[in-house]
Structures are given as C-alpha cells and as structure tokens.
Length: 246
Image (cartoon, rainbow, N blue to C red; front, side, top):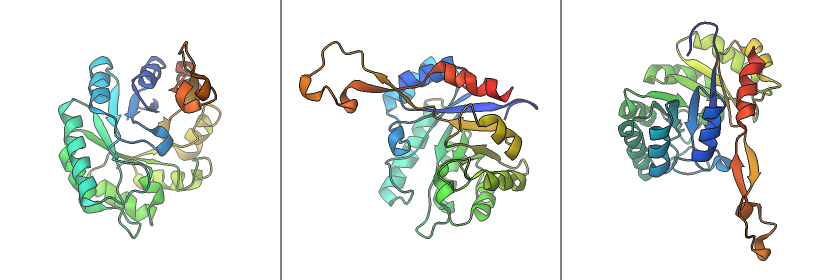
C-alpha cells in the first residue's frame, strides 16, 4: 500500500496495448491477463517479457491456466507452479493466484506452495475468494500463508452489491492483509466505495472495445466483432478513477 492518505489504482489488462494505455493513464499496478472475457488467464511468455522490459509499473500477472472454476487438477497445478517461477525469473513484482477445494474452502496447501514458489514476489489472491464457502475463515487462512492482498467483490457479482461484506472484511483484516475491492468499480462509485469500506486499493478493468484499423474487411465477416474489434482501455478513464477519489 502507498503512503498514508494515498490510494492505489490497479488496472486489469488483457494484452500489451491495453497495458500501455493503463500505464499512460497512471495506473499504480497492472494485473496482467489474457482472455479477460473469461475472467483472465495467464499471459504468454512473450507478453510477460515485453511488458516487463517496457513498463516500470508494478506488474502482477494472473496465474490461471484456463477459464471456468477454480478447482484444479495436479497437472494444472504443475502448470501454475511453472508460470509462477517464470514470472519470478522475468522480474515481475508479484503474481495473482486463487485455488479452491471441491467443498468450497481455500486450497490452503497448494496455495501456500504457490506463495512459496513466488517468494520474494508479492501475492494477490483473486476472486476465487468470492466463490469460497466461508470468507472469514478464508481471510485468516490467506493471512497465515502470506498473501499480501485479497481482490474481492464481497461474494457478489459486483462490488456495489457486496459492499457490506467488503467493509466487514476490511475491518477484520486489521491491516494484516490488504482488502482490494473490484468488479464493477468505476469513476462514479469509487469515492463512495472508499468512504464506505475504508479500503485504500482499488481494482478495475475499464474494459472497452475499439474498431480494428484493418483497411480490408472480408465481406463474409463484416459483422464479426471477433474479427474486427479489439480490446481497449481509455487512458483518460484511468485518470478519472484517481480524480474521482480526490
């Protein structure tokens, strides 16, 4: 967390171009992902390496081998371990993880192994937390294994809906771990969320779309958003988030 009285703005990005825009807009930290439409998956080696070489901002890649649930096989866990070590070797500042057991509790044993593999990098526990059975038990477990923050929307689809739980989690955290609200966080509600929850770090993807600059459009695919629309972040929207906290 920043100095007393300051806020941290984390932006989830989906590729090099959106990361560039988020950095230009003044993001303090990047959650670097691929496939944000699926909730974010681990970026490619090339994306990780180039973002690290070009941007000095805090870089936290997500360690998630696929979309879907947060119940992973041994083989998937092996992939996650390899990706954590790769992020450490590339000089990232931290990683973002999340694993659950079949009964909805935190997969403490394997999450702890990822935290250990990441050391000395920081570790954020992502919104797998919002699908867990008991958020207060999970909070204590994540403190114990050494996570530095929890990204949460208060176990609801948007943080505005889950704000009461986020507020209680932040009280119980008692500065032992950072509670970072996210999901549906925008310039029109961030100041209210800050005042209500007492949180100092905030997460947003500010996802937008931009029409392709392709000069040739194949007629058969003229209406295809997949073919001719790219992910985009407006740097001014990132600036507006911070201005809204002033």
